[in-house]
Image 1 (tube, rainbow, N blue to C red):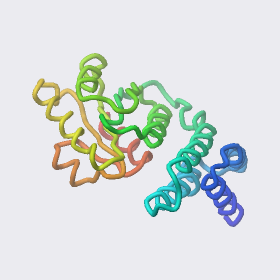
Image 2: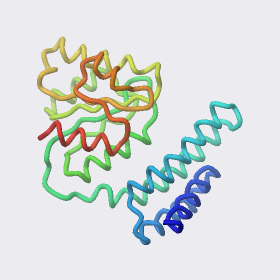
Image 3: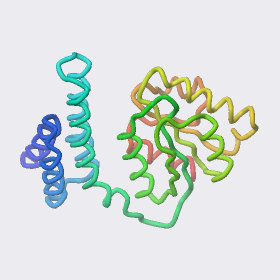
Length: 214
C-alpha cells in the first residue's frame, strides 16, 4: 500500500508540474504494478488537476500553466484508454453525449466516453460546445437509450434545461433517458430540470447508465 501511495503521489506531482512524458511513464508503470485505472484516476490524476484548479482560482498560476497540466492529464488518460475502452461484451445500449453550448471542457467527458465503451455501451460523442439543435438532431437520428449532458461552467448549466425543454416541445423527451454531470451540476438541479439522473464522477456515470438501460 505504501508503494502504491508513493506511485500515486509521484504521478500527481508530475501532473502539477506539467510533465506529460513523466505522467505517461509513471501511469504505465503503475498499471504494470497492478494499480487499477479507477485508482489512478481518482487518487493521482484527478487530485493533480484539482490542485491546478485551486491555484488558478487563487491567481497563483496562469492559463498557460493550466493548459500544460491538462496536456499532462491527457497523457495519463492516454495510457488508461485501451484498458477502459476494452469492450467486455456486445452493446448493452446506445448513448449520445456532449458538452453543452458555450462550454469547451472535455477531459471529464472524454473519460466518461472511454468508460461507457469499456462497459459495453455504444457511444456517439458530439464533442464540446454542442448546440441544443445538434443534440435534438442526434437523438432523432441515432435513437439513443441515453442522452448524457456535460457542463463544467455554472454559466452553461442552463443549456441542459434548454435542451430538455426542446426535447419536450418536439415530443421526443419520452424516447430517451437523460443524465447530467460536471462540476456545477447537482442532484437537486437534475431533479429541477427533470433529468433522469445525475453522476458525480465518471465511474458513477457508468453505474447510472447501466441501471437506466437495464
